[in-house]
Length: 148
Ligand code: RB5
Image (cartoon, rainbow, N blue to C red; front, side, top):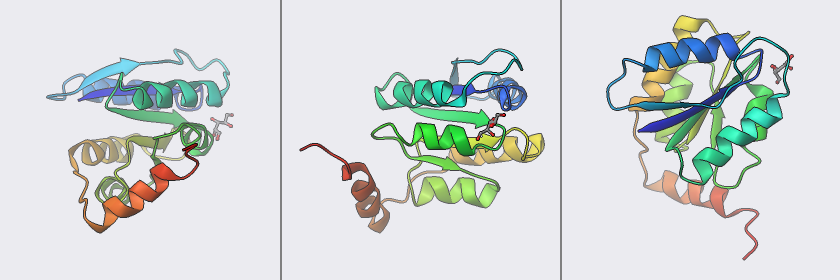
């Protein structure tokens, strides 16, 4: 599984921690899209870049971090085909995969303890979509806003 990861300055340190965690993670390759320091940058740019990478198939999934995870998740969800879940617990990370087939995970670097964030990442990677009735609802999300 190829995972694209991006953050603004508020999520930079958490992004680096997640990259370290995933460097020893079997079956996962990480594509780091920046930012690369705590210098102030604009989160939409990094949210869009990560989401586009997932939407165009250059990565299977994406993880984005900003101060709260809110702004960068809003940015990611602007991109067609993206279902970015802002999670604050392992239970939410699990359900975002099982019910929503979330292809992106958003986390808050200033609002989430690093150890909790890493447990969420681990669960989110390992959890499969349940399909069935959830597939119909996810299809409704993906169809909305289509031009056809
Ligand atoms: C940046 O200061 C902060 O606004 C950003 O990281 C994020 O929390 C936005 O939602």
